[in-house]
Amino acid sequence: MKVLKRFKDKHTGERFGPGDTVDWNDKDRVQSAVNRGLLEDDTGFLEAKSKQPPNEPKHVGGGYYELPNGDRVRGKEKAEKALKEMRGD
Image (cartoon, rainbow, N blue to C red; front, side, top):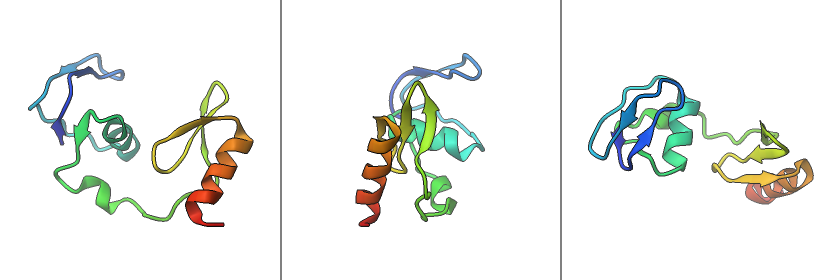
């Protein structure tokens, strides 16, 4: 994947700059970086990931929950409500 913005990898401490490429195999890690605008998925790596939205928001700590589109909300009730709206329930 192509790097769009300068960042430091929190897992390895390695620094990347615009134009660099990364070859990660962890879809969650890639998706997080793409959602934050750090990477461009020019290889189609994330296309293989299921497009079925999860039934529950993912708890990421500190009372925050991550939605399938990468947005984070505080509070489980707000997260569940936002997820229902996304699915059209």
